[in-house]
Length: 462
Image (cartoon, rainbow, N blue to C red; front, top):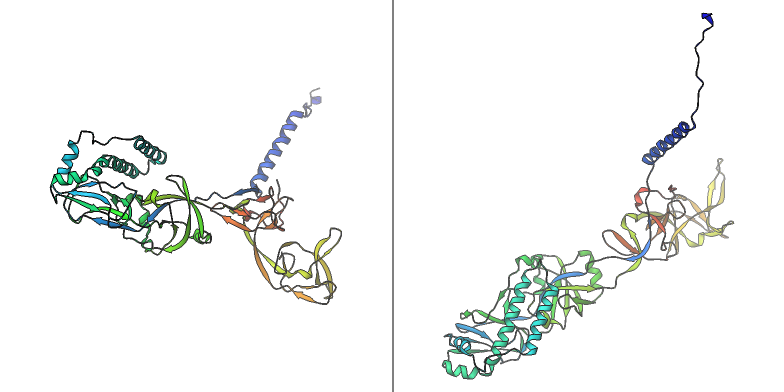
């Protein structure tokens, strides 16, 4: 009885859930493996656009400036308004050798005391508004410029009455104690100096644009001056220029414009300037903008912020990483014909069989560009030394010439198809290319983002 005892084998029960789970896991493992071992090609959709190029510059103003120095020692009082034109022989300031004139001004509390008019209040309000609108925390120097501008306005208002009674005050103070300083020529009066007055545009160096090293001396009224000290300066020519520092590769582009519209950021006004490329004292190239007007608004400013208003190129915007240069063979256009059901471009190429017998075969080709009577064709189809024949003629041509094209890989059809492009403009990241060219791109084409990641005619897998 014991010999009939056998071990019971449990039947294999297949659980459908376990089977599905195993299949899914295998599928995931295969997909992950293929993802990490396959080539990843990223596409880019081409769209119409323009380049963002910075056209705002901090320029250096160059003018014809003359520093006027004192012939006397004493306390100076200004009568001419800074930034306004004065005629030759007109009173600009006085030098009070004793200080009595200042005492007379301070003791004047009667009807002759200067009072502000509505126009004066409006002028001060406009100056405050303009300063507030253009204030920059990184350029505190403008705060001092604004301070001295207000001081100049106050001096102008205070000296308005003084101008009317200057002869009486001169007589009271004693002959020779108050010296009247008249302008030697007509020009615009400025009450500051900065050491740039005698420089020419060709003296420019890169150090000029370091505003942190810039120093301007304000010539303030009621201060004591000595014989030979600068007391004001005159700008007697409306012609002036602004020098800007731009990238070397942009200089030819700007010079080609000859004239350009310029916006002054200080007051948002515009003016046309003639463009000239100059070489500075440091050997570097700069752009000089020549103006025939607008100087009056900036006569006291050495640094002038300008924006160049240029006609921006509009076209198809492509990343620079998509652009490549590829070599092609050149064949005369008359050697290409249409044939076949698809009316494809073909050439009659001489081929040889295994026994060395010569035959002529129609070979399909792809044309990538046409120029000067020649087609650019793929050098993977033809080789140097191949002989092609002109249709309906005994003339033949031996493949020998080649040239390069700039282009991108189009992937609309699922493979890398080279498309020639014509670059209109570019920056560090993107280029603007001409749209709707015969062998080029159109809007919404898909191209390879990284041209080095694929080869010509390579299939693109999603």
